[in-house]
Amino acid sequence: MSQSAVPGRDTVWLWFGRTTGDRPEAARRLLRRAGGVLLGRAEAEIRVGRDAAGRPFVHAGDAAELPVSVSHAGDAVVVAARRAGPVGVDVEACRELPAVALARRWYAPEEAAWLADRPAERRAEAFLLLWTAKEAVGKALGRGLRDGGLGRRMPRPDGPGGPLRPVPGPGCLWVGHPRLTGDAAGYRVAALAGGPALFDAALAGGLVLAVAVGGPVDGVEIVTD
Image 1 (cartoon, rainbow, N blue to C red):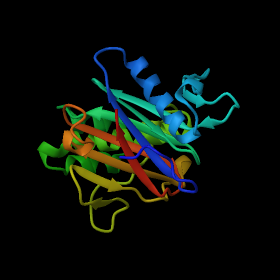
Image 2 (tube, rainbow, N blue to C red; image 1 turned 90 degrees about the vertical axis):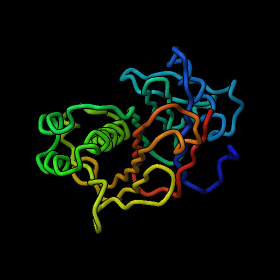
Image 3 (cartoon, rainbow, N blue to C red; image 1 turned 60 degrees about the vertical axis):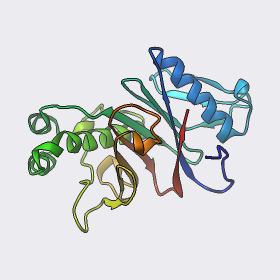
């Protein structure tokens, strides 16, 4: 895949890497790469770090800034970047968990009821699809899951005529509706679930990932480190 930004095109970029232990350094490496590509600078000119609230930042020497978001799951490190506006990303490893009990504790009642109706073998994935969407939107809003973020209603990732529609391809891909409600009004969510084939076999194990942006975008580019 060509790692070059297209002028005038509002694209969400997802950089995937892996680490054997130093996740912060792996994230910094991907953030510098994102800054070099999308700000059009040498990576040596890119400054990365975290602000007073703990949010990651990327900028060049002339103060040109790039909206970014970072997430980790096991040895996977993911950086999302977008030139034209806010972006948030969250990734979780697929695993067994008490999905129904957790949903009834944290999610809106209709979300918990929807999850309980899923086949038993799909409930953990359904729980994580909603969790990562909530986290990604919260990051794009700049506050994560604080202030009731787990209760923020997300579009359900299924159903004809529903706000998310399946798209053919490796793993599963749902493209979100642009009209979320409440404090996330106007945001769009894309949720991805699948095994290594979804990410060009670059990462081991199944992953669930969501990326959120304010308003529509032209596309998503996936780059493996």
